[in-house]
Image (cartoon, rainbow, N blue to C red):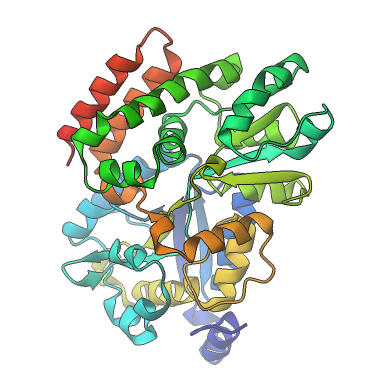
Length: 413
């Protein structure tokens, strides 16, 4: 497949320039797990094929990476390109004029014609100009299950959350942890959004996360979400606190746990382990209750180089073009487990779980905003603090937790 600017075309275009024109571009990101490393290599190889040089600046953990990335940019030591979440992560940096303007390139290549859903590109806009490149559609709205754990123990593989809860005691009796959880704040916070959709429905999710309705936050439907998360405490092991997400995924892969609620990036770990969707593992979007996707994801920003170095800006634009090309979009997202931002490419090679996601995307009613797109970093931090405390402390009542939740929504920016 060939894109607006395929790797082959870029290589041919630059062949006559010679190696002397190659530009080193430091790229910061937090893709360090096995599946993520395989995916980011697709980008690195494609960029190197343009005649430039990808200088990898991986920083483990998004929570660790963001402060470092922001500090370097504001401190006058910008990298050439950086991954951030699609949404409001770079809002202040863009407002401060610290990011390279990609508008001319985006208009020339017609990004608005093929990037979908359109709100992904809208998240890159500020005052009518475009400052980032969405590279995938990621959603937290998934549960991943080891089919063998159930089949080998004479249990039916759950098709929804209700069936999963019903099977949990039997799984425990067999010495298997029902639910693998990583206790990092962003993981617990993300899991809460999955319960919100699965048990409260897409309308409740929209009312809270898009309309910022305190009334919806205080509703009986939201109480049910808190009660379900409280009950989920009894399905995890004692070692969940601080556990990395990919370590929790490995518990499912190796059969130590039955399932994990985690974004579709977990699928990259199953792929690296040699497991096949629909055979060794299965997936439940919306916990099998209300299949929908919160369509956030990753985007690349390009900090303005010192003295507006034209060679670096040129390399930045070449990378931006490469990131959205058809060939790279297919190859990257097949490795990452995410869905592509282009609606005009052939994904016949997508596995059974990715195909489920593509079907969901066909209906606009199934598409939800991610938390990064609707809440400021400060508000997101408040939600994370609340959900972690609630999940870690059985002594915190549902009423107390929900009251604090309502206060955050009421005062959110």
